[in-house]
Length: 255
Image (cartoon, rainbow, N blue to C red; front, side, top):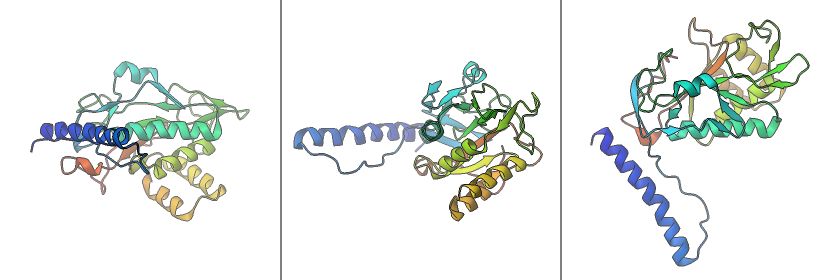
């Protein structure tokens, strides 16, 4: 079965899986006890650095707790597998719900049909997204950034210098929600080592469970000389329903 036929079959099954329980509830006047997981209609094909996307889900430009940066809206790289889009929506909402103030700045996902994306070596198969850092001003008030801002090892902005601080509390809440999300399995979060250290220090200060901190230590990764000191690059693992068309490269990730 080719990938197009598979995606069409997935979409048909997805719609049928939603329709059938609704009929049962209406005819039998019953209330479902728990939701049944169904396959998503989107399909990630190949590797993040050499792949495509079929029936990708678009991330709305603005949602509860997040907003796409203007430059991303203009480039229109707003598509991903359903699992990735749900992950971003949920993460922004959960951080806003806990802390209030500020919002999650969202950069590029993938193009509508995947494939090469300007300024990126990956982002081709609907499983990558760039997320800006949460920041506060020197009085501790959250700021809404519409650009990726680099932060030094002390957590101060580089350009403009020392105007904003890396908001370790909100950024750790974001990382924790991404790692604990029911929507997708996060494979890698690319970020500079010095910011990874700030995040792990925050996790320890909050008393995060040892197993969660251990996983964060493995997943947070600086990819070689590409610092990623101005944003998180999040990559999810292949959704099980996309196998074997979707490909993972866990041992040698490419940002």
